[in-house]
Amino acid sequence: MNQPEAINQALATLYPDARAELDFTSPFELLIATVLSAQSTDRRVNAVTAVLFDRYPTPLALAEADRAQVEEIIQPVGFFRNKTTAIIGLSRSLVDDFDGNVPDTLDELVTLPGVGRKTANVVLGNAFDIPGITPDTHLIRLANRFGWVESTKPDVVEQAVGALFPPSEWVMVCHRVIWHGRRCCHARKPACGACVVYDLCPSRDLGEQDPVKAAKLIREPRN
Image (tube, rainbow, N blue to C red):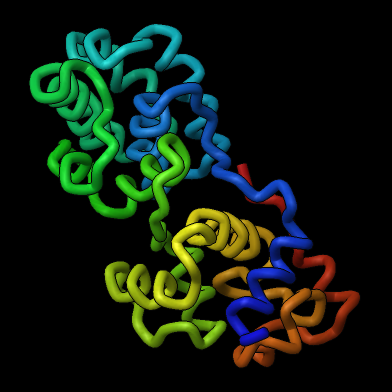
């Protein structure tokens, strides 16, 4: 078993329930939640979308929403003015260009306001079961630490990680690595001494080495 496969297997054992941590019941809800999640936390987004989707449950409802009311609801996630522009704009595009349905292709998704490849791949993988790599900040950081890539460019990371695993594993690899980045392999002080892939990681000297001290650094994602 090569190093990427071994790391993936170890993380699969550690995080058997790894999944997207945004709450959603439809592709539309996941799309909106993912746009709102930029530079925010999933828990904060989930609290906001519970209110947002109750008031605006469909693309048409959000497309016709009063901007000030949307801004008031989503203000806690930050950058709320730009995000309001994006989610109202993409809702209008869904209504005008896609009969109110979220498209299930990358090329179509990235035509929507505020939607790039990262957001599109989140929606494709988690709402439509279409394989894709989501190069978020955690995946970029850990892929570099694991030696899978030497770049922080999302498109480069997407291609490099995708080349290491079969497409059937892409979505779950991303979930596992992202969970590990949120819980253990932190940006500033990784918990190396308590890491399940310590022996496989070329960057294992970056963080706390003492197992007891390192264990105290492991945490659930912040609110």
